[in-house]
Length: 615
Image (cartoon, rainbow, N blue to C red; front, side, top):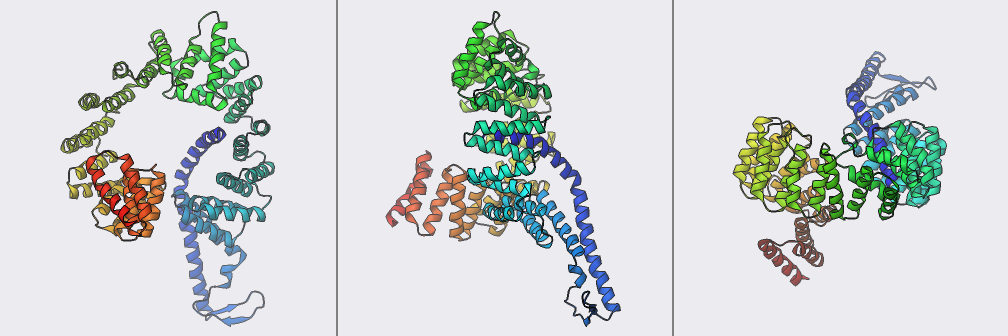
């Protein structure tokens, strides 16, 4: 599925531009929306005035017949072709506005109205898009109908192909995606999705043909050239991969991923000397990032078994008269990929000594030592970065997390408080870390005091305010917690965590259940696939005695949360209420198998035994 990743990367830049334009055009669209609404109202007003002047009569434009008109009749000109087109534009713009505000369901209704008034492929494709975000099955059925209505429209063919692919119907999806590309060859999205689909079916040779045609038509598409190079490498055609890899590099020579792709292509294409130049450049700090190893491993995994490529690097290392640090680093990466952190750590330790100015290399060394179980050695490196380093905050966060996992809470607090005292631009992050450490050891009053200190430093920090509400609830200061959560929501009406937290607080205490339902549904509008938010909604339904709805919500929540024990207990309780003792037992057993706290085990074991006796 890596071709999809390429498309997503390409779309990211496009999406950023679209988001910017959407933001800047939000006022324009809103103004158009209001203007059109005003025009519609003005039209009706003028019609009423004319009716009065004409004693409420209307003339049939076809026959010339004059007849009386009742107050409820719509003027005939309202449904004229010109007027219908104007109204369709109004509903279309309203639909776009709703999509911008992430209301896919509302947008779909508006696009549907626009389409019914003025049927055309363009609005039809928008209708399919909006429905796919709110109701996949309906969108698939609609796309199928549209594809028959508009067999020569590339947008409709692409939409249907994309939906078929999402459903797993690869052969049919391929047919429609090929049609979309044929109808509009310059369409990048169609080509990349088709390549992805072909890759999923192990049709690499066909994917190469599509990719070559794509870059020939779009010579400046950097990710397209990189994609073609990867396809050649997957198909064991390293020599052919060099040219497109070099083209991608020429178009974006500062991108470390493009440098790495060219280096690998040259090495596997037996052009070792040139490959070393690019591998050595990857050691330079400007070509280094926190996720360098992850990105490099991703390439090796995409193009084949990285164990095989380790031999290629070892061969190249023997062929070179002078030891290549770039090759050494690649071998460290490959050892990392094999989970051989001991060997990877040794290579990185040697490189870190040779390049003391490369702090990112030292950071990677600390990561390998941490993964190799050398906690003290890793901490020593993490804590060696001073406050002037760009990596100061990230290494302190790693150190705090490692100390916490080692059970050394006081040491973790010390590191966090030292970071707070630096008062640098990122020090506010450590208020959150330190206060959570305090709360996790039931020192909630201290946690609240620390958060208050952070809010003095950064009074507009909504996340710190949310944490304060959480700690207040844990400290059993319910009214203060509710008031603080309400303030968070007032400042940020789309703060999903606060909406859910307040709703669940109400549900747990069986109070304000109607408000709880509304709050949690607002949270789900922001994050519809969050299993914990669905659990909250399911528990509201339970408290409202809507047990069937509770079961449906909790079943989906359990699936999305990867079998969270708390949700499994809630689901067991709901199953009991609908009279399904067997499923209740299974849900309670899932809890018992994953929880160790004696009090929790005793409570749920009693429920399990009761369900067992009822079965």
